[in-house]
Length: 110
Image (cartoon, rainbow, N blue to C red; front, top):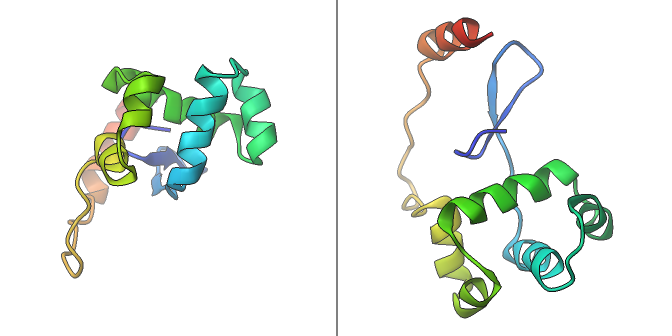
């Protein structure tokens, strides 16, 4: 999984968008990791998600330098914006990836 919210697909280097976790799930992951000191695997099992999703979220949070007190002090909207960036306005189309470039760079790294 990459930091931009894409997961590497089953085909060579193909990137696929991943579904975002709900804010309730994000806050519960952070609580279990920081307050209860649970492992990624234990958190994933208790919330019925993959350990990879827990790990990916914790990497995002670490890059931002957040801790439990800082995350608790943020509203859901503020936390989401810090984790994922500004939401595109409704009706605004995001550019499609250039398949030729992404395929070429994926082959070079393999």
